[in-house]
Length: 442
Image 1 (cartoon, rainbow, N blue to C red):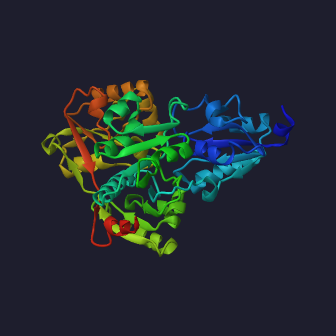
Image 2: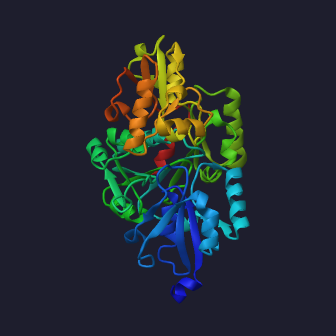
Image 3: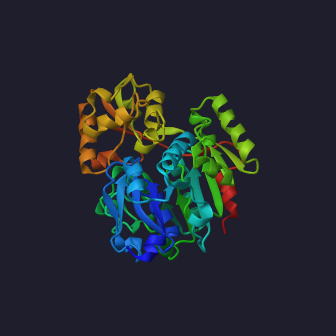
């Protein structure tokens, strides 16, 4: 070990293959005062026991950086003489964050949350950031509408999506998706397709990756405006010209108690309250009251999220299996999404519980998230899990499969049953609207 390494503060970054790498790139990659000895991994399956490659880690890390399971953290702190642990993932309750903090403190290290100023990059282009207080609030539908409105004004719009680097990190340093063929060529998982596919179908180029400074260099060559489409409830990686935050009346109160969702709410120039066509009036008012209490200067937009399906007759009086967006209904805590509301709206005879028919890792996911009663999360982190999802769908005794996920699973899985796709768009109620707030973008 060099004298420089001995003098450096030894660091572990707790993450979930996204914000953790970004924080490292911004604050530690070229900083000899710190030595990052490991990342730890949570939330996402199959990302532990990999390595952040040397080619991305920089000259101070010629062997790269190991990625370990979060359960190993106390041992890592002791074995590696770690002085600081940086928490770097999102959509977790305040209680969860402090529980992790206390474990780190008890193990002998300092617990750190990095500030947005040191982890946010600046662009020469306008940036419209679409973020949320929880995953599953409706960011993608809102981002799609923002893109459409900007294109109608003659702007060249590129979406930059929060990272999902679950495969080979070096090959994912900068990713560009302009067609469905690009998604297939790069072997995108179901989770990646859930975020990229609807933008691509709308004609919007999507960038993502691992190194968001390198991503920005590429995007600035072909865009007039950047639309940041956030992941979970994380903060944007780029300084926002307009910061739009969505709240969710179906989870009223979460906007005040989830990290870093409250920060997104505090930073918002515009707050969208969607799903008002399905939420209880008291829940809507609770959310609005909370918004006004913490960010009274934000522009408040009321909105519905009407669900539409392509073949409603296949739902009416049928036994249906509902498949929903994976992250939204798992760690996002939603009990239902577009598919479930479509099944109710179009009067399904029964919504089948998938739990007795779940296979392999899908069975484990349903055990891990017991709030899921009558929906199947569209988990697909790799070919094995995708096949287990297909077998689970095939085993369920239903007449119709209702897909509430943004991705067309029928293109990826051989589903031997009639399939109905349930989709929703953002629909403002009254004034102001997204169009009016985007008038500031030049």
